[in-house]
Length: 124
Image (cartoon, rainbow, N blue to C red; front, side, top):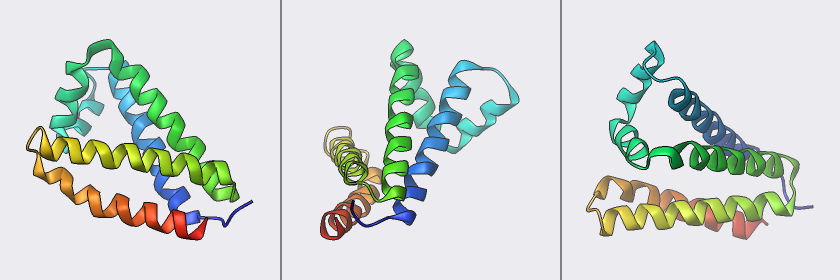
């Protein structure tokens, strides 16, 4: 058992909710809910460009975030490890998008991910 991380659990729970909304929008297109894509039109185009893989990808990300949220809330070591894995993958993705795609807006996630990773490593 490790330290409980309720704020990080809430962060990952929010990620789960956003993935669930994305899955719903992918499953039920052309509804008034599609206006939610105005928040992230690049995400809309990116998900639609990968076609049928978008759905299982978002289900996997949402499930991972959900498990991380539960593990962090309960103070389980596996929850911290899963959160570290997810944050590390996200950090690598942000760096890739900045360096390869020249989307420098993604750099805002780099110090945030590093801070969360350092916090989790130090607090167990």
